[in-house]
Image 1 (cartoon, helix red, strand yellow):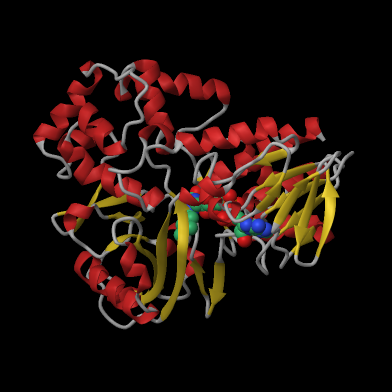
Image 2 (cartoon, rainbow, N blue to C red):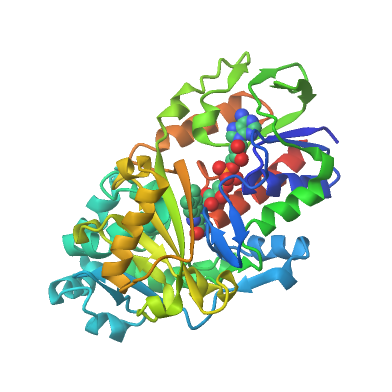
Length: 452
Ligand SMILES: Cc1cc2nc3c(=O)[nH]c(=O)nc-3n(C[C@H](O)[C@H](O)[C@H](O)COP(=O)(O)OP(=O)(O)OC[C@H]3O[C@@H](n4cnc5c(N)ncnc54)[C@H](O)[C@@H]3O)c2cc1C
């Protein structure tokens, strides 16, 4: 069994390392920071639980509950409260519940009669098959109409990517929509017939997948993985150089160097571009610096229940740009998981910045809190001083799978095929959600165990 080096102890690297170690393959995980988990960051303080990075994990693949089982974390898993099922979208300065059934769609106030007609017409819009890398905005206006883009899709992509639909590529950022058009000729037909294909593969649609976290937040997952890895996890160990040798790769960190048969890079794209690399294959990693990451500030605020008139009977609210608010949206965190706020209080997690307003993330924590409170007052009627507040800034939060992203994926494929034993996995390659990263880590472990 040849040794494997994993760079990055976010959820991707930890998952890959855990499964390799279980197979008896020696692994070393190098993490630049002083803690495991990457962007996952949960904080328990004064009875409140703040989740700055991801809030929930969707069971879109059987590999996700399998990881929870393999770590014996089932007793600590919390599924979201079923009564928090509404998803609000802001229209006319008010949160309006998104329709959850065809009848609800016909009667919703979110869309005009014209937009509703566009949905009925969608199956008859001819598919585009010229292979073009189209933006999400162009795709949605072509298949549906501008109102769908402005009133719904803009808010949804802000919720997932903190991104801009004009820049994001439908093929790379929303691959299921792209495939529905390619395979079934229409999104509506794809919704109906795609369900059968998903059933066969064990995959679950995002809209149907169960959502969960843990009693002490998502940090429980990387903490459990780190505990299983023990000494194999090296914190405060930034890898600065990779040199290809006769038998594999020499990995250099400021505190030493060692040789491995295989290296899996599970860090961020912008740090990948900074790695020094020596290989006869003449690898150039600098193009990865062109992958843009949207900045996001997470503002977590606790309020007395009586200071929030809105019932908070849902997941949260998303806000399209056209509504002109400063915040991108809020998650009703204590409605999803009641153990996140003590006694008669609630906790709301609000996101600011993204590609919509990147400059807002340069503001001070006090200014960010003031911005969040102003919009929460208008939208949810929140009054009174917060009884809990905490702010975290991710200056490079989420990679933007913008038009042209295929170039980066192509480069990764090319390097993997020319530089034997070097692999890439994680959020910058296989999808930006936590679930995508877990699946990416599992797949990397499977691929490497046959190689190592
Ligand atoms: C604010 C925010 C909210 C989110 N919300 C959700 C959500 O609700 N649901 C969801 O499914 N997803 C969400 N996501 C996305 C999801 O959290 C991430 O895609 C996923 O956690 C990425 O994991 P990763 O291991 O690929 O990368 P990361 O978590 O970025 O980890 C990479 C690690 O590599 C390390 N590293 C980099 N370079 C080196 C080097 N040279 N040497 C050693 N170490 C290195 C870094 O220090 C870091 O720890 C959110 C993301 C953010 C930022």
